[in-house]
Length: 256
Image (cartoon, rainbow, N blue to C red; front, side, top):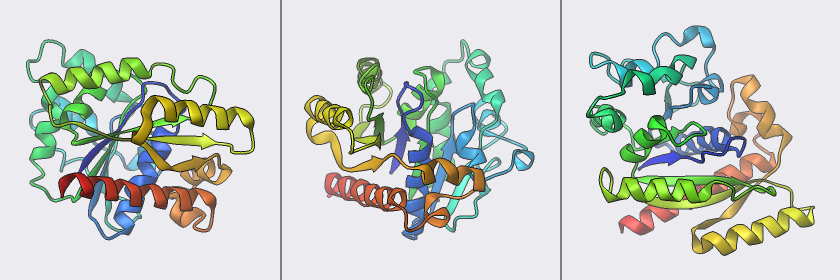
């Protein structure tokens, strides 16, 4: 499974979902790779100090002589490795202008790993540019985090249109794994209304698991930990482990 975590709207819990889903998969004993494709590098600094990131996903995608394996580092989580990002990743689109294989660079680099990972999770930037398209071309599945807020569905039409364009040619096998509602405060009527609205739009694609709004989830990256070691008894840990179980359930059901 190669799952891209994407939503061009920022602040929806995309990186939190990528980090903790990858950690949960690794905790199940499955060798997992987290690929950071966001120039903000928040997934990377959730596990690594800036100073130890010598080469990044920019180097792997932009340079023919640098493989993804050359930039991968181990994280403190057993079975979880990361291909980290740096701010220079923002220059990639300009670097690859006019290159015929621009949209296939990440897919080609992943293929060179020869299946060493059972699962790959890709953290996409909050945009629908070349980086996100590279992730969608490389992925087998797409997971869309949507924040439980008034503007929740803003921009989802553009994302769905991009997905259909990718399906038409470069990656016809791309599947929407599901939509996960994040930062949900069940105490408010507005959040409940937004949840109902998302359910109406996406129907059965919405995961049963809802990620509750949590201070612990916001704090854990500062300590270079996933929620499972930072606050293992928290609601955030329970929610993301439940999401992991649902993700595996859906993938296995569709491949059976």
